[in-house]
Image (cartoon, rainbow, N blue to C red; front, side, top):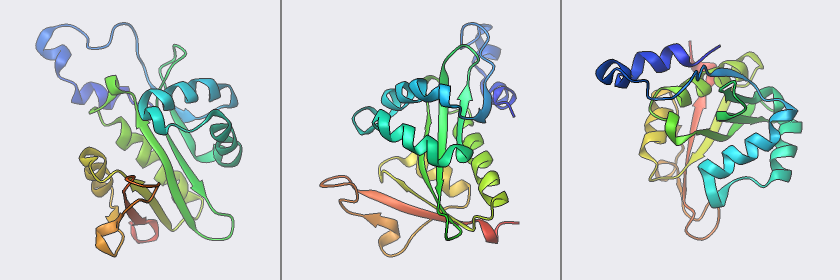
Length: 182
């Protein structure tokens, strides 16, 4: 699965100016993460999430546990441009999206959606029935993306959990019932 056709369809910059918005060939491939990606995953996570990025040791452990549902966008030139990570439980049919990111230069081209659609497809094939995630309440773009994919805020309080990750770190919890999708 590649992301380039969707990106070209949505990006009108080249059509309007006659210049490509991204220098050189940037064919993105959506694939399962590899162990050799771990240093680049750490770099990407720090670039996007800054002070709340996963420590390297935790990314390693998450990879070891959930590699099947750890997907990346590979530009073919040694850089990753995005990832999604879903954690599943062994005894139930639940999953959590632990991370979704796309580099700033590649946002607003449908790549986050493409990552989410692929991981949700894989989760459903694995027998997962319910998926949850947390999102910063002010991250309107992410909330709109998740809502468009069928996620809804958990009750009570429309999913808002004060101090979820510590003082001042509020989050909105959203869920999707995969078993109810066609």
